[in-house]
Image 1 (cartoon, one colour):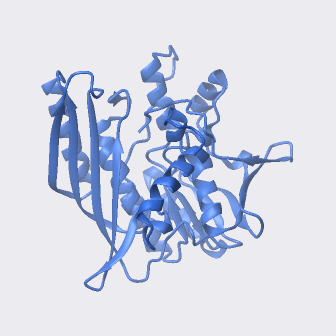
Image 2 (cartoon, rainbow, N blue to C red):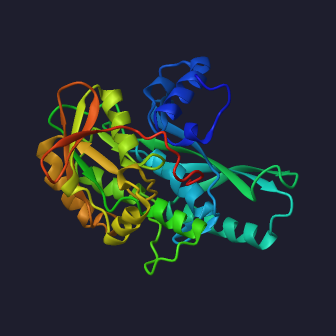
Image 3 (tube, one colour):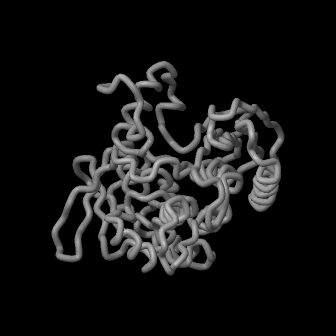
Length: 334
């Protein structure tokens, strides 16, 4: 790495994030980790299991549409679900700053319990640590989860094939917009709500319709841009998307226009990207639209043969390359 110290750009989900991960990963090189999926898949007693872990440092800890507790369950359960797995059990660890409100902690704990129940996941182990005032920021949470994958499911970021269609399950940019509005007290008339949600049910609906899904990813940190670039590199394919087909609510469009932001780079916590052979696209799209979480689903692009990269067709008919941003416009978004 060029820098001698870590700055916020290394957490933006862009090229610097990938560089940092590659440097760290050199010490842990193995065939499971090298897949770089949302969860590690391994065999145990003839069962296909997946394991994932995530840490949550969002600021503010309470926002329109959720809180750090709900987010900590959704984030990890969704990573398990993006492997086509059924989430089974979770761990919960909290790092609490001295002076943190006990009522806020109980509210967050309740939110965790309610969200885990909704996800049909049991929290079976955990840990708490308290650090000196000023040595953390209110509360940080880590969750890990294990899920089981049925034998005929094979989903990975490296499975995208030429001719596959790309679907996004709904309006993008809502989580980042909601958190930024709350954090900065922007005086907008429209209050944008975070899309923070459990996606395991939506994935189940998709797999009931099509077992041949090649890739599932939830575009969290770094947004749709980062995820599509990761898929492009993992599968060694070109990706073309159409700007006019990307679902964005009018409220988020206005918010982004005022602040000069691009929804493609903004974090989501309740959306997924599904990539499947063209012949199954209509069935998958129909299954998504029947679920409230997928009612705004749209086909946004296609996988083509060519040099890895992501290109977008503008309304004027021209093409521009979409790269993962290293600009940390909104740190601590998840």
